[in-house]
Image 1: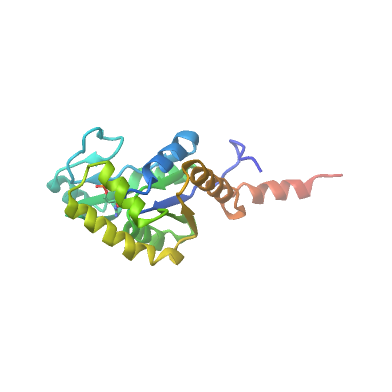
Image 2 (image 1 turned 30 degrees about the vertical axis):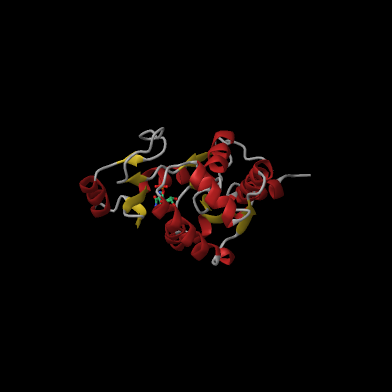
Length: 214
Ligand code: 5GP
């Protein structure tokens, strides 16, 4: 089933959740690069940029007063405090993409994904990425040397709490091999796009089809 440009489809909200150090960023960035009907939701955050991070590409880096006035203005679909910083998903670009029949990928934490899916269950697809082991996850966190020992400890503790809830997710991908994990993620996206309920063009098309004189 191909989505012809004049055929209306409804986009989906693809939530990809994983503990840090599981390779989620590489998987999600590649999925977005490979699909021009899929956009990454760029969150606003009060945290300082890390080396190599860019405004508007990785996050919108804002001060606390600006963040709080966005909360006041109901400009976020959800927001949360994670490790002492605030993060929020701006509402407007998400709604605009869905209206165009395009999809939005969220690289956000577990609680944020759940809040969005509570509001938009029919549009949401929940994917969890599992590490091959906690030891490997700890090794990757140390190797990227972005976090203090204390933060790494918190991330590992939170991972354990989250993994317990794996049954909440529609799909769970084991990232023990990047290429296979990517292929799994891409297949999930393609199949979800093909779901009948998202292909709103089908109703009028079938109506026309059945009206044909043969
Ligand atoms: P980091 O500071 O490492 O980029 O992100 C810390 C955590 O905040 C990650 O788990 C990340 O997925 C999460 N996060 C990023 N953006 C958002 C957002 O808009 N909302 C929520 N709830 N969490 C977010």
